[in-house]
Image 1 (tube, rainbow, N blue to C red):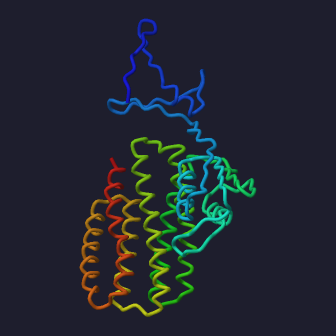
Image 2 (cartoon, one colour; image 1 turned 90 degrees about the vertical axis):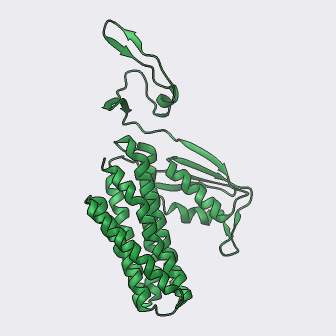
Image 3 (tube, one colour; image 1 turned 120 degrees about the horizontal axis):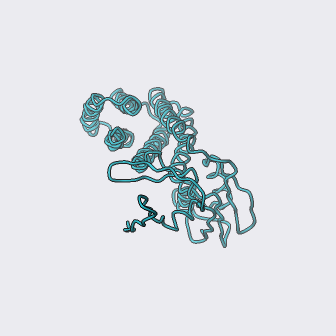
Length: 313
């Protein structure tokens, strides 16, 4: 934050200069219009023009599979329209499996999780990812609801898999996770490029969506480990999975139909879940590990309960 002096214009008008970087990022020039909103002691300036992230070039030669994946995802979410990926060797190591993968296959897989971005150019040591659609900030509200609905559906699918011990259902969870992650990536990208109309809420929305992305990742891992477990879950474990899913449904309802009484209902169920999970520990250790993984969703949700409450005021 910096202080800027007010400049007198005529008898009654005062003006202040705007930071050059802010203007350049949005490609604003003389004669362009901005919107001015009064909010308490603050004046908020907004413009329909997005922050120009433009193009970035990165070299991923020394990075492993997971690091490259998260690096590219971060740049997409941050709002870059062109990502040039350079590498001295065509392969990278995946620590998770100990296998070697080509960087090309990694990027082709990852770009499928990016709405509006495609691989446009490719050579033996260079791949160019570029946005091919025009984004709009009004998409955000619809995309956010889509993220919620996809995560609810993914969670419900997992619970059905736990009940039936069906490996095909666990595989379906992976596919649904990928779709939910795709829309979460896009929602975060829109926030970074356009912000939220009420600027002070932008960071809250970003936090909520990032946590929702963590939740769907936990659902995916629970499905993966459940498939490996290959045994029928106990009735107590199935009940806990159902209760966690109910927490997710309660939060969704709370988010779109704000009511503080729903926070009390959520907390009551969350503390009950803690007790039930603890009681399960001694009897079924392997099941317990999977159940604990999934039950953490209720702990993540409480972290964004207060975030949703902050959006109300």
